[in-house]
Length: 594
Image (cartoon, rainbow, N blue to C red; front, side, top):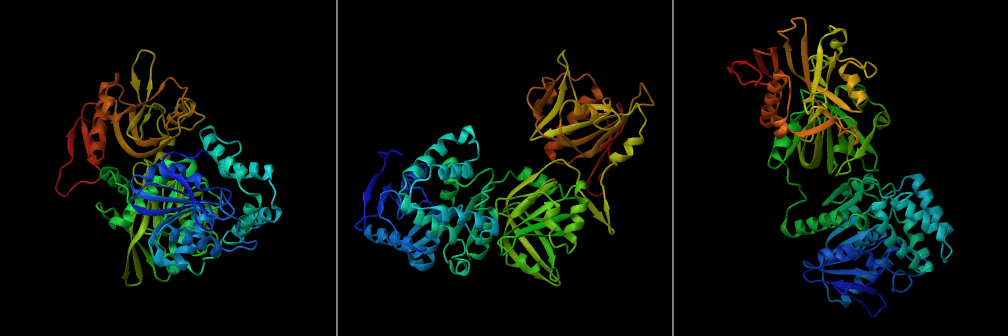
């Protein structure tokens, strides 16, 4: 990697090579095994206008001298402190990647007066047995000479095999660093790295300064569970998981990663925590997905294992700041785990997750084997198929009789239009009209749906420019070509039906009834010229033949904006809109759907 004119490389008296650029509060960047200071080029370019950025070549890397034959983390930490002394820098914020994260933690634990904050990117912690065996096997094979096949395997592990086109340049930069590292320096450092994942297990509770542990959701070797476990142990620790990222995320997605780094450093200066700006309306809608409901609350335990329990004691607390709460019984097996956790996630269950609710309410030894899940931003598990999910930092812990109240500050959330799972009087309940009941409906009943994807509604467009909602004769199945589900399947539309929205009789054909649901849809695959996703505020401009459907859509747009949906019952001329939730003494709304 060529040196940029925006900074200069220098050498300290002990032979340590480093890059320095910018001015302001000092930030020390420490790379991982096989890399060198120049790998931080994207971060230096984005940070030098605000910070005094120093990127060090670790011992045995770049132009720095070799480490001792049997080096330990203290050797690398001492190298960094000597550099700070040479530059007359007292306290510094440290950003370390992979092995560099362990070195940064070592400095922070041994010389806390020299560290203002520490950021650990893609750090390892208590590797599971299979990962530990694999990395130690690779370390044992190193003999101090170049290894082209080993480099190929590393690139595949870090970027994928084959490397995606969008990551080709990042992979090229990484490969160049690996191919230019001193083989002996690499071997000595990697052998240490292979056994250093437990070096700070008992020491992290003594990490006094603000600490951010950030990794990629797809980084198997420096997993979200590892970062969540470290954040849990550090008194001022915080976990951040970046969706879709792998081990070399600082090179692959420099803008995204640097934005998180700088936000955390600014929060250290200003006293605020990392907190996204929420769309209050969307947040309220996500909270509204919970219906007297059933949730599974999840976190990561002290050993990095996923933990969870079923709860229906969930409620929103505040929009600004965004707070929610859930209660856990003190006699619950997971009570000690959640009381000491730094974060948790609340998964609002859908009707299809009834079995999962039972598993997590039981004492089953491996509850997570029954579900599909991924790590959220805090590292806590988010369950696939949930109606909504709220990923939280633990904001307050309140003692309340035989329960503890966990108040979470929401870091991230998601929601969809699926039907939620309810629970009442000891039994599961399904709100709205039972879709199963339509299986025996009259053959001429029209069943349709208003299917939404991120503010857009799905329509089918005819050759003459008219638009109509998906509908068919009865609900049916995917194999019934004339039914709603059959027509959706034929067009490769993946939809989830939710609440009932309108039921009306056809005055021209008295025996015919129209039933429409609200629901959600995944963006359909390109190539279907008839399927259209139309912004809600543009629906009024469409050519829609049926006046009753036009009226229903106008009501949908209005109620969607007000977040106050009702159910219309009548015919296409006259009927009632019954709100799903109506203030006391407010009458039903009579008249047409619009």
